Length: 315
Image (cartoon, rainbow, N blue to C red; front, side):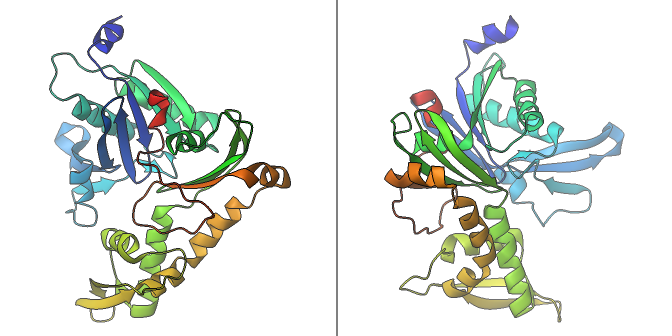
């Protein structure tokens, strides 16, 4: 009863709870929050264990730079919850941030998208985490359907629409028709795997260690999935493993293309449809990347102006 009362003073939310970033959409307002899914935790033995000291962008800035008593962790892994407690606290922080300073504690209706291949246990964990964060009602939608609707694909028509949703932890491909999923495949490969491939390439070929933030910047600025006409270059810094001192060096887009071949091939394998799905999707193909700065070469590319879950409350 109290949650229902507080609901009158809350806004309905669509949440894209991703491995790398969390986005929140409010009807008639658009995307009101886009922050990293990172939590910074400090050891406090006198207060009963660990205490959360930062969430979101502030916590991400601490990755790889924290002292021994502070740890920056990602509570989401491969699109599902890896740490229930931290995910609940992170969601609570984001929901309160969206609603601002209000007299009543917010208790919104929440819609959360989940990977198509997630199990019932993983979906129940996300639902319980959202409820623990204060949501009075939680609805679950699969990421391929949310991405297709958000991209404006005609999923209600009697023709196939194919969507590729590349996230931080998972890549999902699905063929949709008549408001249903005809074929779907989920590969636990995404932006994080790209970052890791770049880090390994630099370490193997240059003998230099770079961090996650540097690897992500390289991917966004000069990363590509196919050779371009113009070779782009980027100067970065890292730690020389043999000498143990900082070194500056230059990478180009062709090198990053080579570094990303393995994860890209895994995504291409996931896109390979069954014969039935291939016949269904012959009419429409769309690519819906959720992370900016990456170049794709598909027959038709429709990049949505909103995250995967935007259309859930707006349609």
